[in-house]
Image (cartoon, rainbow, N blue to C red):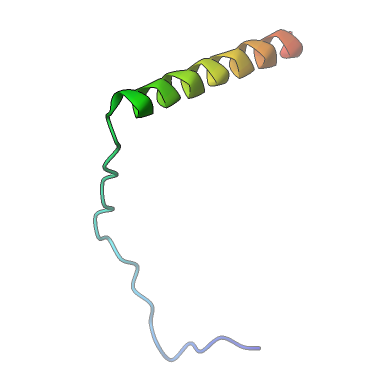
Length: 50
């Protein structure tokens, strides 16, 4: 189906909302674990690419 070109769509330049991360000890532990996982994935990726 053909798009309706009679209305000109103007992109929005509204600022994206900032995320409010939970900084409790439980959440920080999860972020640390995710960071360790990402570092391990990066090491494996680099090892497999060489």
